[in-house]
Image (cartoon, rainbow, N blue to C red; front, side, top):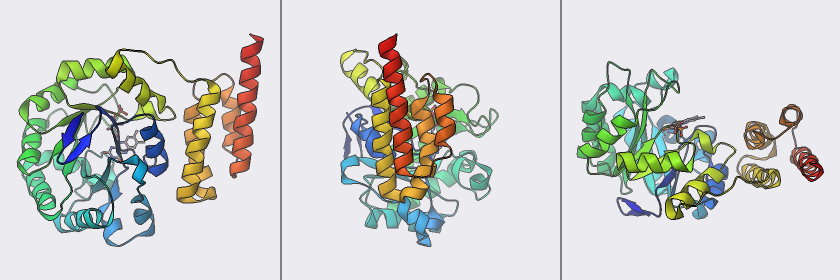
Length: 329
Ligand SMILES: Cc1cc2nc3c(=O)[nH]c(=O)nc-3n(C[C@H](O)[C@H](O)[C@H](O)COP(=O)(O)O)c2cc1C
């Protein structure tokens, strides 16, 4: 258990914000697998301020996924503050998170995302302004630095704390690394030792054992899992259980994977309507089926499907084939 401002997070396992993935449908599914905190995909401050329909839909939150954190990004103070105030007043998000890690050029060229990593003074100014204008606790998610020559993680973490943020998430890669190489957990440990606010460590956690090792070695308050949870919310349950009891929970059966994939699909349909949801489910279904024998052929079929009925039929038939072949062997 740990605390972000007045919000109690019941365990030390956090779902990472992932654009195009961490919407209500995925978050609620992951929450049901025991995540202490789920984080929403980043939303553009201007999209919120202009009441852009897509951005507004991204603010949809379900009571059952609480506590949850909603992430915004932007490059200009007034605009970021305005968006934060909207989230503060008109959504039931538990926490407002500021993105300071996105490496995408379309974000950094607007002086947003990881661009701030070069300027602790700007971080202080921006985060203080947001904190001063909202009631909800504010956190920041950042990367270790811009590139190997510009790693200001300790200064940046101090600026975030001094500005009044109630926690920080740190992905141990530089902006230049994107997702290459491995995450640097040493810098995460140094940041934890530098500030008093809770630190959530992030990068390359893909098993219960690695999660425990990172927590033990760095002393971070929690760990955040991103890519390992794609099509695999079980990782969250496995990590939570291992941290609580030391027990290693077995992987789900193919049928269980398909059932959860379909549950995820129905939630996505509720959120986005059938057409868009099924298009988006193509990538999720591929993730859920990863590692299952014969999945390549099924994935090709899924990539042509446009309806709930069709996707359901394809997945159930595949489950039957897998079940029959496991009985035969
Ligand atoms: C598809 C995808 C989308 C992402 N979108 C966001 C985002 O919206 N906001 C953010 O702070 N980080 C985002 N990230 C970064 C993740 O939150 C996380 O820091 C990164 O994947 C490292 O963690 P992992 O090794 O557990 O995947 C994204 C990552 C991926 C793979």
